[in-house]
Image 1: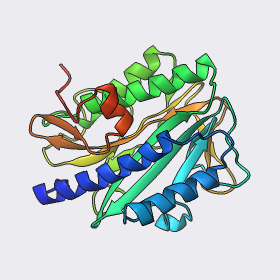
Image 2 (image 1 turned 60 degrees about the vertical axis):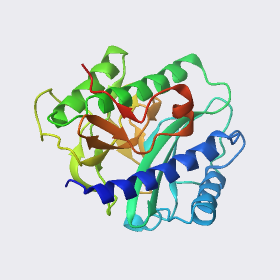
Image 3 (image 1 turned 45 degrees about the horizontal axis):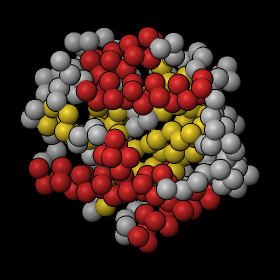
Image 4 (image 1 turned 120 degrees about the vertical axis):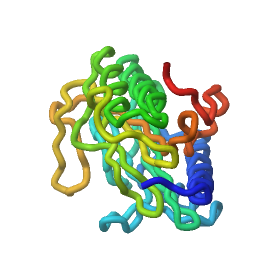
Length: 264
């Protein structure tokens, strides 16, 4: 479950490369692009520019490089040529990348064009909630501390947290133990140890937390049709806190540091 220093170095390299994929997307105007076009652009960059492997493609029979979850889609949205992003949409792009046998996983919800204040606030709060969870990570903390920090922030802002999907350990396999729930009670659950690597990826709904899976077997939507937003990072537990392995260029520019002090 814990990773050796050389494994952590390889995971950090995968995370750095994955962050550069989001850097590419950040520089791209998404209005008018189909989610399939975005998928193909990301695949070309990962394979040809980064000399890496898009880890989601072929996993569990999935045929694409990324998940594109638009508006009321909570997760696992399938890229499509007919799914064209329009002004005012929000879209979560969830991407995995494998380099030298180790996988990193990250996602970001993008504001497409001029997004209304209510949707913008949801996206902002989902981002904050992810960071609340990350700040709870340190040796000796418990898994319940992460979920409690996330759900408390979501509820304080009037949003619900999806319970059916969670973060996960990651390394040579995309999904490893432990599961990282985005709700919980402080002081409960597995004790975190230096060298553990996992994702923190809360999904916040504007309305109720209940979801349903569409007939394609992949696409998960809010049951009440409300908007949903998600952010995700791959993190490692360090001796004195947490290291964010997939920190993106926009986050580096905005000021968050790669190694966070434990939450007080």
